[in-house]
Amino acid sequence: MSSAAGEALGFDPELLSDLNTAVSEACNNVIQHAYGDEPGPFSVDFALATSGLEVRIRDHGRGIRQAAPEHDGLKVGLALMSAVADRAEFARVPEGGTEVRLFFRDPTRPGGASGAPSWSASNAGGDPTQVWGARLPRGLSGDVVLTVSPVELLGPVLGRIGRALAPSAGFSLDRCADVYLVTDALGEHVERAAESESISVALGAHDQLLEFAVAPLRISASRRPDGAGPPSRPESLVSLADELTVSDVNGHGMLRVAMRDHRRS
Amino acid sequence: MVAFSPTREGSGEGHEDLQSDFRVETHSTGRVTTLRLSGELDLLSSPALEEELEHASGSDCDVILLDLRDLEFMDSTGLHVMVKAHQRAQETGRSLVLTKGGDQVQRLLDLTGVAELIRIVDSPAQLLEADQARDGA
Image (cartoon, rainbow over all chains, first blue to last red; front, side):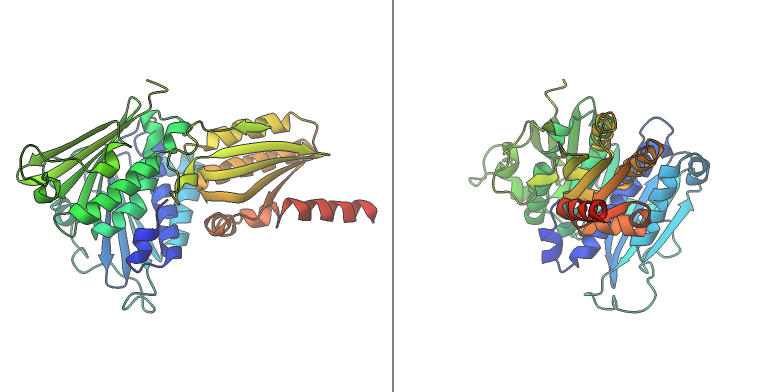
């Protein structure tokens, strides 16, 4: 998985490793347990705090307390998340489902070396969907909606989430080797083309198809150099993706990249 | 013998993150069957390891060695496969041994207590030396 961008952003490599371990467990839990035998939608939000990183994973499934007694794997996953994060909370969502909140203290950041980890002031005590969900650009939907701030964090975390979803798409191990190529290229493109400090990715996984819809991007970043014709496509992704489209959604650029597993289709 | 090998080798030459595809290479020396794992062991790839362990447990080896030195990432599904293999090995009079993995893998083994449950050696050579010393004693 790519960690270069995260390290360039100043994050401790061990923190990024723990972050991916925890996110992998959280995604596995939702995919395997939250909706019974069927996969279901969930959201993952990453946000930079003064002293580290906050992650929230929310599903609308049957709730962690109902699934936990049946599955040793789930218990191990929860224990692992608690062990690698500096703070972990598992909360029931009032309208049904579970929200996992993880905090990773980064000793290299101001305030990260000491003191009790705490949730950022903007989210403390409030309804996270109202605060975080409001950032979700219109036009994005998928099985998983990932929101990342700052955008440089996307590359280090998108690959692991894409890979966690690949089994739901019915991807073979062979094709999964290419998921990181696409997500790393997406991360690099987003660093250049993001419209703001926050970026959202809707991931869809079904019928040997894994797709990523990324927004909001600067329209100007997708314009052809001569300013004429439809938006151009990021060349680094063209050779890797089976389908790639750039569109204008309510004045915001949206990039859609799809991978297929041709061996199985 | 190459037990499992992806077909998209070299699809991104020169890329530092290309070793994420999962592989198992199996070979037997004396009474030890070694499964050398590389790439990422997770929800997607764990069934492939389970299958290879099933084959290994059908052989007449005494020790199954999982060489984790090239394993880049493991999650709890991979861990679960290892714990099950350890239990099955004990039931059939064999033993499962691991080599130390990379930082993320080793952290997972330590945090979950699996490092206390399953014997871990630094390298396949160390296992061989330890066993030769024991046999010679």
